Length: 235
Image (cartoon, rainbow, N blue to C red; front, side, top):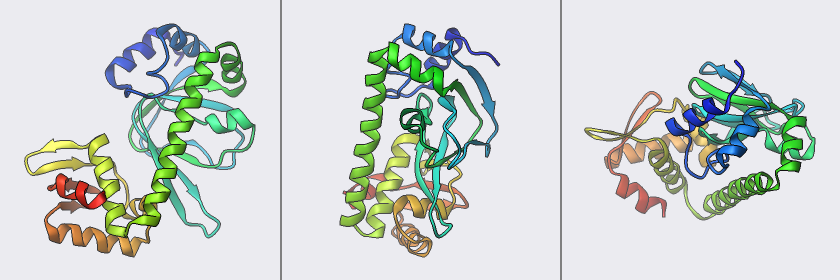
């Protein structure tokens, strides 16, 4: 389906997150960017981008969340992060011309603006303010990664897991009668890799948090029952 400035603006009002790449653009900048690509829909579980493929396109999320993963040399898949409406995908390959270093999978139905890399680069060259916005987004991700690496070295598995659960609750939590529900469909293995721990270690940490009464779990759903306690443990 072809894109339109009106479509992007309507989507932005519906759920583009504050501080995201798209939200930081002016209406005119969004309109010009939208004219360069097409809007596409992807079902839950669809692979939007593949690790090691050429970076021939950039995507701007409009609706839905995705997970970013990478397969290590031992074949273990690592969860690198979760991206939200308004985020940009595939920007690294666009900038350096190298193959993609990660895959992107839809966690739920996704709508995205798909722009050819050549058109996106030309857009950045004639719109330096947008290039600076993209740089700010990349720096923000770098800072986040650096802080997490420091956290991994300084805290135990329960502390790291508590930090990830607090982050998920703050970003995606839905208030429920017994607490805050997180329902992103992440597997225990994915949660473990995002925490920087083994699956067994993460399972044991989850069990400890359940026994403390801080969380309750049901398949891939987690309910945070004592958010303040998790925050203190994560600090």
